[in-house]
Length: 396
Image 1 (cartoon, rainbow, N blue to C red):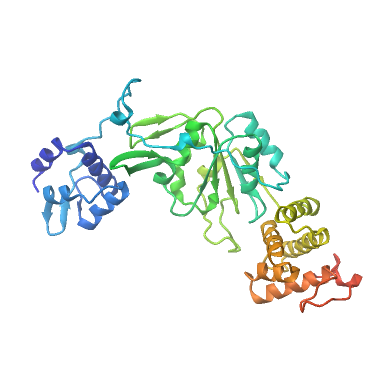
Image 2: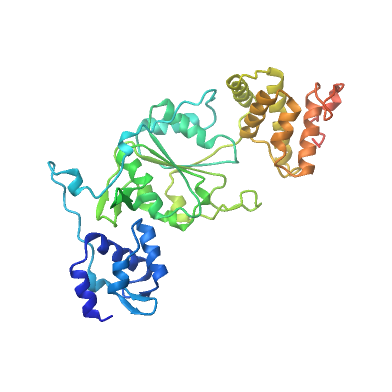
């Protein structure tokens, strides 16, 4: 295909086709020769039909199609200001229905405020932009704590679960096919900024270097959406919080497979890091009793024994005596299983079956030493003071 033909082609390209060329050039480079399969990738990314027009006009060889370079098609035209009395159907390039939704988290029945709850509540109440990074072992209530702060304060929250695949398009938004039209759909970050609510980046350490697209957002200055030539300024009350099982330095012991070493510049933009341990025995007992009440399976003795059991295992874990730990979330699973099946040991067995056989057996055996009324074979077991491990004896 000759260069002058390419120029002629772009003189009458529709806005959608120009967008396609712009996107393809970003992906493969202006003036590149791409295959039919690669051109289809562009259309899939934009959520529009296959570019048959491009195949006809830009074919340069067998399964080869030449993209015009930047100087030939130019930058996309800036979006003009929308008149106040203009028809939305005629000028609306941006599509969203988020304004119709209530994003205040629902109160969690039986939730017990503890740990960093009061600190995070003060930050949210202040209305100041103050990014927070919350780290701690799995299942200790990091995400729930932030959600319940927002629920208590009637503050909207948008939660985004981060994965290795999360990129700028997922976070800031991109073009989608909406009712037969290609429109820019704002991502969760933009929605949070425009609503002045809290953005929660959950499991943040599973992300890649693509999270660097959030650098200006984490500075509280706003962000430029280059796809539609628009600057977004956050409303008062907007803030970013992140949760992670690590501090963004990876997992040396391999417990949290898939976590990554996050860019130092990204981590540095979080004002504070809050380390969240498991709850104390007293607090966790309240949590488990609340769960039992919610599930209709109240048993004060069972609640006390479960918390004691979990606490012994955690101390052994911290001392390097065992490779697994019982989280608060797993205790909640056991309580729910007890409410369903009505059998303590069956509930425990089902909920620790995820561990290897040796760990499962030792965990169950330890529980029989703490709870005098149960045994591994389901019969009664005589209780003695020697059954409960002391600080000087190994748990198992």
